[in-house]
Image (cartoon, rainbow over all chains, first blue to last red; front, side, top):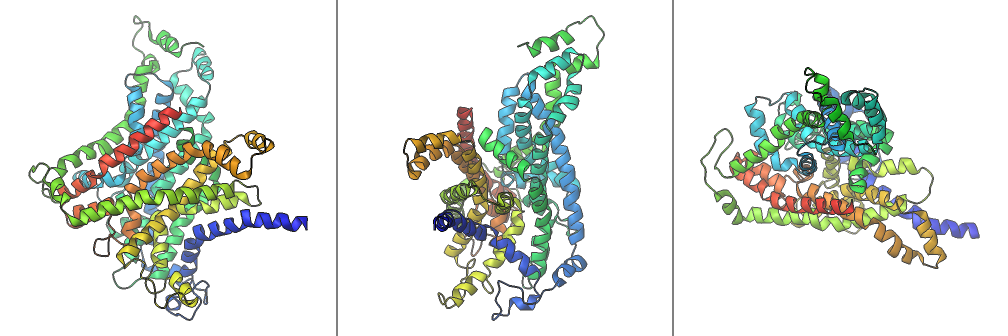
Length: 281
Length: 311
């Protein structure tokens, strides 16, 4: 009897709300997944229970691979994400170290400036930036995204890494310097190895943002095979009157999967990165 | 504590010695500036410069491919009498601010649930974060289907329960369309609030709760006087970030409604896109987006002040 009371208390205070949250937060993904495995005709069959798959099919995925540019979108998204993440990390390590450790004129002002840059949204910039990109002749080239994404990534990554670098005791660096190491040697031989968790958080964060980016990719990469996954899915699979629902959902599932996968592997780092900004300031 | 300045100045003081690269790089001010450069160049070229170019464009009647004449503040003044712009401003306000309390309360609930000891807590935590993690453009497509006028599962469910007789037109009716995009926006924001608040909850020392319990505080009192004060800071910061991000949102609305029906669901981002790119009036478009600036600056400065105070 005592056991059942405990269970009842736990049911109402934990299992029930948890179930409601899981259904609320994950239902759209469940829906995307089952639609991607249904033949399109089944969608219009109102007597079928839409919450379940009546006839399992892979035809939507086949359609995606054979009749759309999905594989080039995948390649583009990967190239752009990897290169801009690397570029942003290099810049951010430098900025983070300079702001955490070095005293130079204007460093306080630059610190605030970098933080403010974190809050400048792409919607404020995309029109003039489109002008800049087309003046430079970068439309439909990887460079258009590789050079612009870091502006959205460097501010947060620098801020995060600066926090990490500050937690490394100064004394280690000072004694290394007394032993004849130069600043640069200290940075890559001592500071970076000690900051691997911070680098992972920053790297995952940057990669996720690149993969998910939509507005710049929509405007700068408008030609079919140069699109990224989010843009290609939205613009090539939604045509005015014929909707390829199954293929659309298949593309959304495949495009979300790598991010979900990386994220669940590194969830600890991601959350520490995400909350570093909010909790540690 | 030894002064790092003295070490670097010692290393670089002897001016009689020939110039050495190493001494140059060991001077803090030289190295500091050099390390800032790569990032600073990117930020200046692709963030600061476009920002000022945008201000210039907004003062001209430029269209795409044709640099226009300087017309002063005419774009900004014209917008004040544009009814679609009024609707846009109102929508953005609802979309970014009215949704925040919902996100915060649902996020608090989520954090309290996740903070309990249970089996499978790490996959559950990873799972409920998905709305925040996966590309918004792609998850918005999921909502696009759920809100479809023909085979929405919500309509199907309500019809089979006998609650409604014909399908709900989630995105076709102006009022419902705003509510639907706000719903998807709240759905995406709840995990962010949840996980940030959870981090705040976990920073509360357990002893505080135990001490309060020994002193006879009820669950509600402990929640009110121990939990709430300790998470007030993170809730405020998460709210400010959320306001800034959603105020300047684009993709969710672009995918769900494209600002329709009849321009009733535009927010600043989508209206800028429509006027500046689709209608090619880049000067006017720049003016629309710049109307966001004072509001964003206000919330950004608020956030900065608060973070400074916390430190």
